[in-house]
Image (cartoon, rainbow, N blue to C red; front, side, top):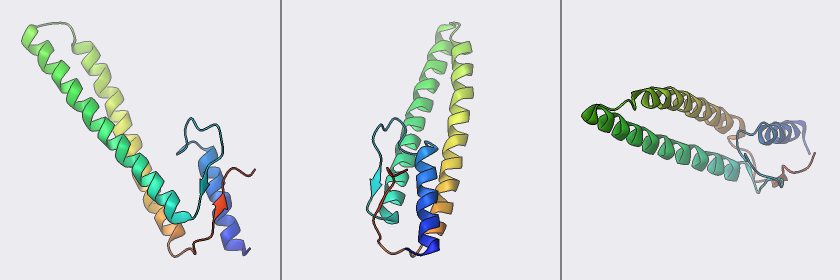
Length: 118
């Protein structure tokens, strides 16, 4: 195996261990190639974006209900706003990471690799 491919595999192993993807996985992850990894990672980001949109929508509903009823729900809305902003930043970071990974793995041959190996 050439040195460049070894470096890419090490980078993938570090990625999985860093919990950027595979969070909550107890068993190792196996990707048949870099394209599969990119696809899984892209899907994960898309899912997180969808959940964030839904959470923002729900928080807006709570905000509007609180305003119309004059209730004290605004402190929880403010708290949720802060958490949602942090999640949006995390998604942006993941998106930037994905772009970098696409650059790293661009043109890689479809060589299978098992990320569960230590």
